[in-house]
Length: 116
Image 1 (tube, helix red, strand yellow):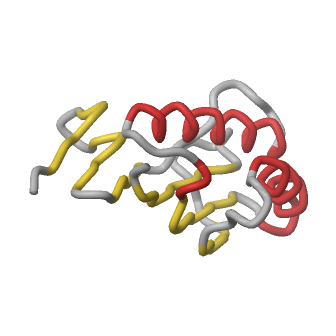
Image 2 (cartoon, rainbow, N blue to C red):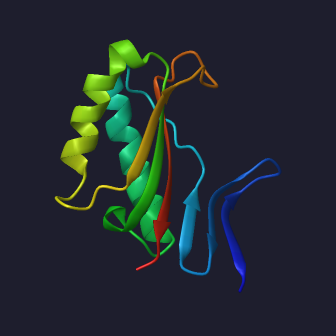
């Protein structure tokens, strides 16, 4: 089987696919200032990358969500996340608090999906 890498630079690939699996690197928001808005921006990026790789949110296998402040931002992130998921299609998921790469980033999400 071939490994396909998309949106690559010397440090990482945004998307790696192997066989029927699609791995996305951590996606971060653009300009939104709050956790809900940042989650919406990140999920839009995930939708676009999964489509490029031949998958979609209904084929998610696993998600890891990183929050800068889990106490302050979990409810807002979770509200947007839950609305984004299709009924009955929730992946396995882990949510953790983490120091993120830039001070303004409140939410980062990485996923693994099956190809359609």
